[in-house]
Length: 286
Ligand SMILES: NC(=O)C1=CN([C@@H]2O[C@H](COP(=O)(O)OP(=O)(O)OC[C@H]3O[C@@H](n4cnc5c(N)ncnc54)[C@H](OP(=O)(O)O)[C@@H]3O)[C@@H](O)[C@H]2O)C=CC1
Ligand SMILES: Nc1nc(=O)c2c([nH]1)NC[C@@H]1CN(c3ccc(C(=O)N[C@@H](CCC(=O)O)C(=O)O)cc3)C=[N+]21
Image: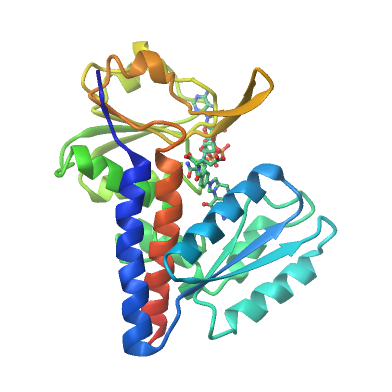
């Protein structure tokens, strides 16, 4: 049986570090690191995530501000709010929950955020810094995945890693971080040929396709490390249940280590978001 990488427990460790950094910023600089979360529209999944983020932020002693805007919000309204948050010295981190309703331009919204407050790490300035291997605000989900991987592989050098998915929020930054850690990285996506044998050759598989149980035991080399980023909501006996992109039961019999869903990458993502907020606050002191 594979070793279970417990994201819930690991995230609590990260959150403890965040809490002590929050305390230090308060005691030494009279600053309360504060995260502003912007949610546009009524998407129920997004509402759950936003609630969790705000709850965890409060637990660490951090400040948090929630802006809930109706589905009818215009680009102008949203740009105006971001402008206000950019210029508010009490706000250190800004997160606009994605996806936005289809009449809004995500790229334009992300570009409007002050890069120093872009705790998602999605602004082109931060994307560029990551690609160039410079310190920056690193996207939360890939950052969380790296912390989980380090539990199993303190040295990632020379490992074959396959990232399934090439989105701007998960796949691409994930590949950049693995490359920085000296892995040999393959990025697979919906047009990739023979993805199964690519995965079977990997020491590390990062599943971020958003396809329920896409990856089964036949795809995994015995002993490999499997990080499941996927969050897919299904209904079982009328109840909402979350499953990943990995068929957990079969893969956990083959893999060396695996992350569960829920209780894996999700909680780590939130912990890294709050970690980024303290980093942003620290940098804004200067
Ligand atoms: N745990 C967490 O904190 C987070 C979880 N998520 C979850 O992770 C998953 C991915 O999210 P995100 O990156 O935003 O999703 P996107 O839909 O933006 O990207 C999915 C990627 O997977 C690829 N893909 C889709 N189907 C296949 C397939 N059958 N074989 C190979 N590749 C495939 C797509 O390829 P192509 O580009 O060719 O279309 C695309 O690059 C989702 O389930 C999401 O809910 C996301 C963010 C945070
Ligand atoms: N600007 C922006 N930044 C994001 O980082 C971002 C986003 N938009 N949009 C949506 C995705 C998804 N995402 C998750 C975060 C936490 C959990 C999480 O905590 N999951 C829990 C379960 C939560 C539940 O019960 O639903 C777990 O896996 O254990 C999941 C998914 C961040 N995203």
